[in-house]
Amino acid sequence: MKAILYTKYLKNIFLLTLLLMITPNMSAQEEEEESKSKFSFSGSVDAYYRTNLGGLNKVLPVVDAAGNTTEVISPTVPGTSFANRPGFALGMVNLIAGYEGEKVGFVADLVFGPRGEEAVFGSPIGSANIVNQLYVYWNVSDKVTLTLGNFNTFLGYEVISPSANFNYSTSYMFSYGPFSHAGLKADFDLGNDWSAMLAVMNATDLTDVNPFGNYTLGAQLGYSGQYLNLVYGPQGFGEQVDAANGNIVDTDIKSLFQIDYTGGFDVSDSFFLGINASYQDTDGTGFTGVALYPQLTTSENFAIGLRGEYFAETGSFGAIGATDADGDANVIAVTLTGSATIGDLMIKPELRLDSASEDAFLDGDLMPQGSLASFILAAVYSF
Image (cartoon, rainbow, N blue to C red; front, side):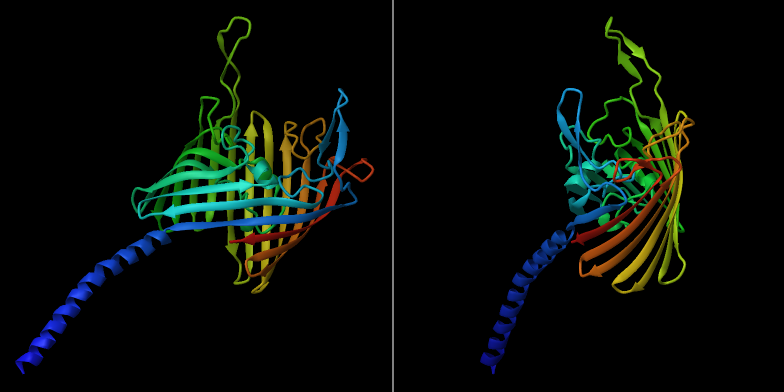
């Protein structure tokens, strides 16, 4: 009997020892898995086909005064960013790596391809045509987060990544507002669906360096998905060197001011209405615009949306491509987009009509005209 009890005792000791040996290893594995789960990797790839209806659909050879031949994109496209190349064309590869810790983290967002090159045009040093966003952040508390680095703009309804936009082509307001900022921002959770943000930044879209020696201020006030955004600051040199004597002289530096409202409402379970309104001014030159984004989800795999935009420029801003003597040209752009989802792939057929107050476009014979219709078929894969 004692032998049996002793044997059971030894078995219990052995099992307890084994459990104690396994438990730390299991805990270490769980911690390692938890640590790995904080890292994320995502992105998108997109390509498209574009044709102008009643416009030129090829690249024009241009010969300069010296007899050199260069190539330019068809001048018949709308004066907005991205999706402007004729025929079958490429968007970009977007690779985003991140780490989200309890208190600190980072985001490294890289872009490759024509769309990426256009998006980071203001990054001429070191990361030209590659870095879209690169920032670190610190959750100082549950209510305050500090972010330092290069981050996409907080203004506007649309973004650079085509996977996050309903329409594939972009609006005039997005195209002529800032794309990205470099600086330090503080985000505040004010409670009861209220939020705020304050930022000190380089001049807009200068994300690698501050060549001007002055700074732009940014602010945002949000409530339940509605945001009021502000940007103000000088966008050029305040001083320059006089070549005649080498002395530093003051110059007339102009400051950019932009106020922007971005928001939207769920009208029903299947119908969403997005809204964007923006005003930008730099010493009398700028634009005013408003856009509505009604979107209807018809099934689990298909939705259809419209972007109706009115955009008016002042002071010969030049966004539309042709301005009258008073510098107050305007354009109405209507874009109808379908979005069919096949797994992680989105197919987006799109019809767009731009109608300007001036003859801002060219037809197939290079004759000026006031409107342009176009068709785009885009494919966007997200991972």
